[in-house]
Length: 371
Image 1 (cartoon, helix red, strand yellow):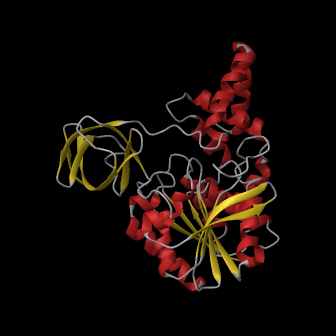
Image 2 (cartoon, one colour):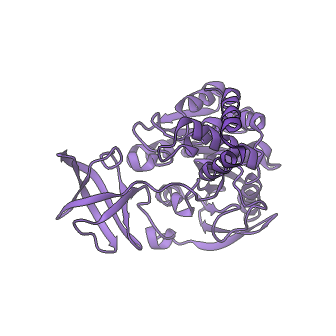
Image 3 (cartoon, rainbow, N blue to C red):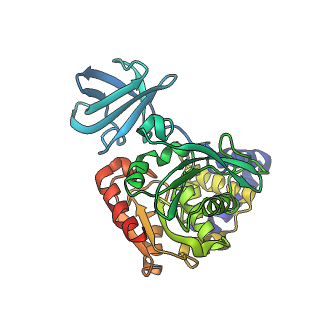
């Protein structure tokens, strides 16, 4: 269903349903799209068996997925699981790599998430870092800074419903390459200034906070920067690369699961949790109305028309939020700059989890010529 047709369907439904109630429902559905961090948690599954180095869980599409993931439960319970060891009878057994917090027991209800690393660069990885703040137009934005001898600084931008810990899995490679890093926050994050209207704007305003981080990196001695973002953070990177007065200092971009088709991603986000197509359309339209997102401007950004530098585009063909077709389109339209790397069977913004070795190697090969 096209965006204009969807609007007509929703308008007709509103006319026959009670406009006030319908608009209220649309607003509620749109919270999944516009409220920072307002994403439905993954469904809980049960621990059926535990043994040395193994755990058996209820089998679901997520729990049988290849890769490395966290199990989270209760008040801070956290463990990490790896390869699938076997399945059958509605259960799956995975390697239990470590149990760090809380007590995992048979019968525990757990959620599978990508957050295999928690904390900060020192507690999670043993890397020295400093807590700093980037001065932006709305105030001070917390950031992690790690040192490196290279003249190119990597600015890392987390995605929706995530925080700076999303960048932790790639910091070891960046440290090995001796690249300084700045892992940033932006408006709406915990500890950062709020957006004036309290809503996320998919990069249209957030790019200014990342632009301030570029300025901070350059002021600290970097000659160039690489922008590295996940999900909406990748879209923020695209906006920044298109609009920053410092775009000439952008040496490259790494885009992990970027939101490139706003209407479709908004529909998918609004429809999480099993909502009907009509309700998903309603939520997406309400999100557009609440944020005033410029669809034409967004489409230009997503087309890569204003890309200033080589770009590594990492995407799953099975991404439930960001359509693979949009990534293919960007790679085709900007074949001069964009390299598309497919990570099959991965979830949105959890590409590293699905195949850490291949992901890291693709990143290393892209970054090495930019050093």
